[in-house]
Length: 259
Image (cartoon, rainbow, N blue to C red; front, top):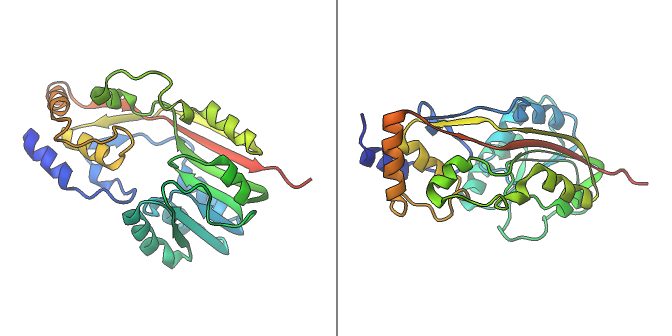
């Protein structure tokens, strides 16, 4: 069996750009929500004339959906704030006819004119700006996204940060987000919530996950949290996979038609 040192060193050396999770194969699993977001997105892209994908990461999800779209939108754009992801998305999506716009993490406005898109999508946006989403949607246009919800994978997070109050990540609760969407002038068309099971089969998978999803344990490094990681390594070795539950919600909202 690989040692703690070997597993952590391997995970620390693994690249983290993009939303390709193939590194976890055989080492960690996460059940997928029943609604099949990427396939559903493909259907909507096939019916859109203009579309924008927010926080596209490395463009993998949008690329997957476009590959299954017979008639892609005539106008197609994506945004991404992290430079390595933006570069990766550009290489992947340019052949699909998409323009990738690199945005700043603190940008207050999307760099698009009012009513530019009849479909705005996102898989796991960092923090949706509902007023900006409503602004760039055409009247009658749709926002279709899968969000990370309230207290997602907190079973794992609290192994490193200790017990956290319910108010932490409350802004990600589906009811909170729905209220914010309505306040921005959007109508909620569909809202579904699930908590898929996650399993981490070795400590390397934990390290890579927390390096990749940086907002889960801010400032995470394997050196900083060595004590907690070694304790969790012993538990996984003795008891089997560490189990946590992600929080996901599918949200579809529509900008009210003019008049």
